[in-house]
Each structure stands twice: as C-alpha cells, then as structure tokens.
Image (cartoon, rainbow, N blue to C red; front, side, top):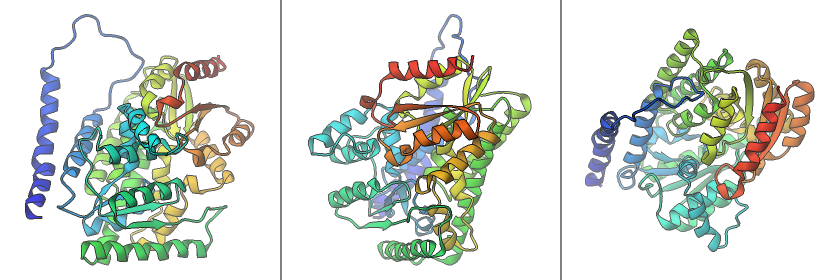
Length: 439
C-alpha cells in the first residue's frame, strides 16, 4: 500500500509533468516543414490547448497507479461526483475514455470482441468500447485503474445500468445506482427527496469502502468548487455569443474534458479561469475560431468523435460555425444549480434536471433559448444511432424549431463512437446541401 501510494504520488507530481514537458520539447525540436504554409479556414489556435493536454495527460497517467493507492470509483458522466472527492476517491469516467477510443479509432476493434460475446451492435458505442477494453486490457491511455466501486446514474439513460452491471460482474465489486425519475416540467418535491435519499445511501457505501467519515465542511467546499467550475465553463461558452465567436463548437467538445473528469477541484477551476480569460481577450481583439464566420449554427447531441476533424474542416471552409451545442451546455445547466448551503438537496435537483432526463417541451425551450441568445441561423440535430435517449423526438424538435425559432434545421444520421455506423460521403453530401440552402 505504501509503495503503491509513493508510485501514485510520483506519477502525478513528477513523472506526469516531466512527460508533458518532454513532449513540448520534442515538438519544438521537430524540424519544421519547408515550403509555403497550407492555408486553412481556422483562426489562431487557442493557447489553452497546451494546458488542456497537460491536465488530461497527467490525469490519465497518474490514474494508472491509483488502484491500491487510493480508492477508485468508475462513474457515469452525469453522476454527483462531489460526494466522492472529500473521501479521496480517484474517479474514472468510462464515457470520457470511450470518447478517446473513438478519436483514436479503436472502437471497431474493441466492439468486435464484445459482439462475439453476444453484445448487440445496436448497443451504445461507449458501452461496447469500454466493456471491450476491460475484456482485452487494450486502451489508448495505457491503463485504467481497477475500480473499488461502480456508480451509475440513470439521468442520462437506462443503458448505463446494464453496462455497469456487466462491469460489476466482471470485477466482482459493489455497484451503486442513483435512479432519477424522468422529469415532465419541474421535478416534484417527492421525486427530489427520492433522489436525495439515494445520495445519502451512496454516502454510507462510500464511507464504508474508504473507512473514512465525510466532514460536512469538506462536502460543502467541494460543492462550492463544482459550482464555481460549472459557472466558469458557462462563462467560456458565453463568449461565443459574440461575433465572431472566439472558438468553435468542435473546440468546446474537447475542452469540456476537465468539467466532466475533474469537476469540484481547484485544477479544474484554474483551467477554466484561464480559458475564459483567453476567450474574452480574443473577443476584444476580434479574433474568431474561424477566419471568416458567415453562418452561425447550433449542434444537438454528442459529437461524432471519430470524424470531428473532417466535419470541422468542411464547415469551416464554407464559413459555418457551431457557436453553441446542447451537449456542452449540459455541464453548465446542471452544475450551476448545486449549492454548498445544501449539498445533498441541491445535487438531487441538479442531477435530476439533466437534458436527457427532461421532456421534449423542456428540450425545445432550451434549444429555442440557445438559438436566440447565440443568434444562430440553423441547427444540425445529430440522430445518434448509439444514443437513442438523446435522439428520440428529434424530428418533432426539427419541425418545432423551424416554425417557432425561424431557423433552418437538418437531421444528420451518424454515431458518436462507431465509424462502422457512419458514411462520410453521405454525411458530407447532406451537410453540403444544407449549407447551400443558405446561399
């Protein structure tokens, strides 16, 4: 235990920072390409990208040594993680890891393994990638620490319950479920109390695993930091209300990693404070995410992780920019509700009112508000084969948005993780036709 803890601390405080510095030096020493620079439609890159790489590289590198050194919990993205922080848990987000697998295009290989075991290809691509990674030990991040506890919340879908049950069976460890009733309008008091009671039960389990007792002051402090971090993330998103937007929606997808994985920490808040200042400085200087932003769009649903580069190039070359997305906005809407004065009660409310756990009128209202505040002329609704809860009702939303927000809307069929369920040619043709409709 002591040796493992020493390895864990050295990995996070010495080796991790050294590796990121070494990578920077390698890039500086790399011979620069000769000849004229290739023209591209994007504005200058964000300086915060390097800081983002540092944070996430260190997070995954130190995580390799977390099991045996500190308690480890694998949690879903919309889980009230604030409870785990004061008890010293290292948290792993399988969805975040699966997104990396998709960007690295290893999802088909991992999915093939689980599909041979009987899992259907129609299941969530994130679930197939992570179960495949667990079964094979293959991962682009080197190694994921073995969990002591699994914790899932049904506010994003019911699939996570079956996904985490499979993991619990594999690791032979406890699984805690936070069940959130679906919300029509506003969640009634007895629904919030139902969720709060489960959070109190979670607290007991977490304390039992760690052998520690959570101090109310410590929980309040983490809750305060999570609230601040969410508001800082919202401040970053708000920068795109300006014209031109200082970054793109594709940038947002990658820069949301800390608010998912490190929410409630000083490191997360310091990062977003710096990013917000950089974006606001770009706004003052008129520096855009695109060199020439002619049309502003909204994106709905998860990104197509494995094709972010191709899609961003196609849109940027034609001056189209996603200035807001319902996906990145979700971590602002929920986090700003949690309150240090009532950590459990406010968490029950915040994590119940997640976009995927709300009815279509609420989603339509949110999208109309975003369309108005960000002054978009169109929207692309990603009909995601892997994420049915996010995709259901999109054709109704399309009609209502066109009629009530007076914007043009298209539905794009794809998958957020698995390129086998995607045709780049068809997607490019559909997006090109959509852009030409604005001519």
